[in-house]
Amino acid sequence: MTVLPSQPPLGQGEGARPEENAEMNVGHRDGFGRYGVLDEDADGLLCHDCGRRFVHLGLHAWKGHGMTAAEYRQAHGLPRTGLVASAIRATLTDNARRTYATKSAFIRARDPRRASAAHRSGPDFLSPAGLAAIRASNHKKLGTTRRGIEVTCEWCGNVFCPLTGAHRRRFCSRSCASRHNRRQA
Image (cartoon, rainbow, N blue to C red; front, side, top):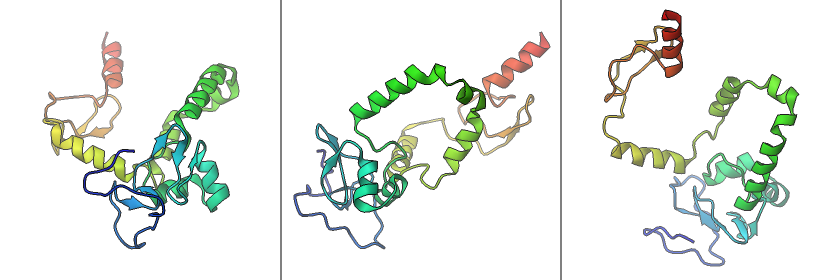
C-alpha cells in the first residue's frame, strides 16, 4: 500500500471516519482506506467501510452496506470507474470486445454524442483525485491555457476558445477543416 507522506499508515481498527462536515482531500483517512484512492492488491479491492477486500466492490457495497456503486464512489471520492478488480475488468473487456460485432441492434441504436453528454452530466463526472491530477498537470503545461477569446468555426458554427500556443484557427476540429477542404476541391 502506498502511504502519503503527510499521513501515518492505517492499521487494523483505525477505520473511524472523520466528521461528516469536515472537508476531505485526496489521501486523507476515510474509514479503512484513503479518500479518493482505490486500493487494490492480489486479494481484491479494499472496502473503505469495513476493511475487507472484494473482487466486486460495487456488489459488496450494495449487499453489505446498502449503497449503490455510485453512492459508494461519491462517499469515498472515487473516480467514475467500475469497482471491480483488474483481472475481472480485463475479462469483462475481452468478453465485450469479442461479442460486440454480434449486437447489431445495439450498434444501430447507439448514439455516442448523447452517451457522452449523459456521462458528463452525472454528479460524479470527475473525482476529487481526478480534479487534483488535472490541476497539478495544468501547472506543468506551458502554452496550453485558453486565450480567452471566442472563435466561431467556419464550417459548423460552433464557438470555441483556442489555446494560447496555437496558431490562428478557423475550424473547431480537424473534421470540420477536412469537410471544408473536401468541399473546396
